[in-house]
Image (tube, rainbow, N blue to C red):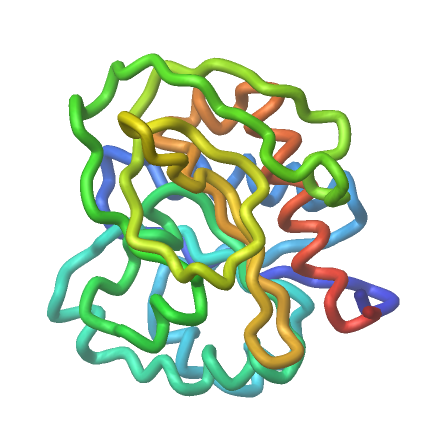
Length: 217
């Protein structure tokens, strides 16, 4: 991270996910790690190359949104900024279902939401798959009652946590490299209450801190 690390949190989209409330939680957690945040309620900032390159971390918390809004956005500056070393992170649909039509964006993220069978209220286990990564430090297996995401995912991602779909181990959290940038994603976070669960919160905070640190190696 730079001497005065900053994050850009882009929040909006599907309101039942309460993206602005979640953005506030994210900003609070980043501040505890010395990372100051700006919260922006517009996708246009993702086309602002200078603004993106001036931060250490972009947190995309844009849930689905309106297709017409997303078509108007040129994501090339974002893809280039991350490739150049800016970290990117997000949770749930904020990053994992932000741009359904943008294949290169999904390739950068490392996955894309497909479905959540049973909708909200499914109780399932979250199993830590990589206990040697700093993101999972201090996080043990836990149980959550929420949406259970089935994802398409890139097999090159480093899987941090999984859950079970029948006999398939489905990634819940992972990292990926995009050029010199670090990518962190967790599918947890359907509501602010789930985001605030201690193990989910710790996983998110440590993941975002790790992604922001890419510029310092």
